[in-house]
Image (cartoon, rainbow, N blue to C red; front, side, top):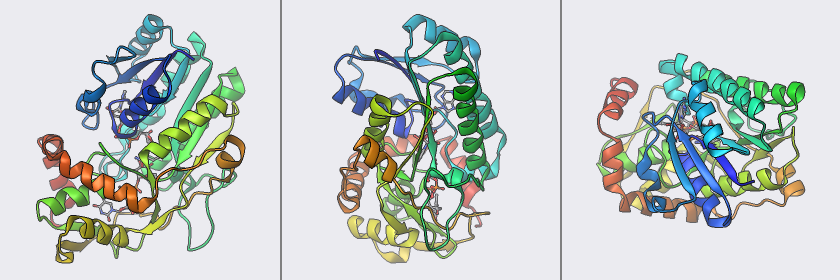
Length: 337
Ligand code: NAD
Ligand code: DAU
């Protein structure tokens, strides 16, 4: 592994992954291939700008010519595929781009990787492909797929296409399915950064329904170390669940954030629920810990404290990503809700 194509490397998890990967591997070149949608931001990588092991290529995974040029120019031997439309609420407002990017874009990337030949193709997916849990049980790799939102359905489709490329063409694909991530550089449309950003501005915190839905939170660096373990030691053709055994009700997360920000609970507003809102996610990560020796390194209370501190220190970053398109989206998503 020398020339690693990281798609979506200017987004939240992709940018954290590039930073992590350069920290733990000396002899690599990362080609960060990103379209720079509203969610992609080169500012997320400013601290590694001078690192000669990182090259940025602006391109679209749906565009064969963009992909072929990058594979050829940088003799790519490994792919870590993050690029996607990633926000459930946006997939409810408009599902089309989710199908284009997540389904067709992934198929185009697989096709070019197949033609060029690669040693490893990591398809980064999500626990949302499994659907929703009741109060008991956890998702294992054997749980059947039951995606509920357009986002989740597009990711489930891309998982199956990736595995079909393994089965039919022998492309060395591995699929990972992780639970909810949090940490630095997360776009403030997702629960944790949105609540932090609003609370800092003393704006209402829109909690969907009664705030009783449960998510299983993992610090983004732990997701990155899991992908690294899968890349180095994972079995080709396998699926690996990734999670930290850390379930929280949304309302309890919001209370915790308010405590760290020293802001009043009167900011909380219960608003109309997300249509088709999955009740509970919980990951059984036995396989990756048993077979690859992976363990999360961050406790939630510490990770949240660090995340709040990061957003406090990076308010100019927040302000910049919350202008323009974000304002339009926020109005459409929350006004009159
Ligand atoms: P993000 O929205 O922050 O970043 C997505 C990145 O993909 C952006 O940089 C964007 O510019 C890029 N992109 C979008 N369309 C593209 C295209 N057509 N061509 C090239 N680049 C394109 O997303 P994220 O939260 O960092 O998630 C990354 C991946 O991890 C996604 O595949 C997502 O499904 C998966 N995932 C996310 C979570 C989570 O909690 N955020 C959990 C599990 C899995
Ligand atoms: O589980 C992994 C998935 O986690 C990833 O695949 C997705 O890319 C990622 O966006 C995330 O999906 P969720 O829908 O779980 O994340 P989100 O941050 O949007 O919402 C978390 C919970 O908080 C969910 O129950 C909805 C609720 N919520 C969210 C927002 C944005 C609110 O109550 N209010 C809000 O304003």
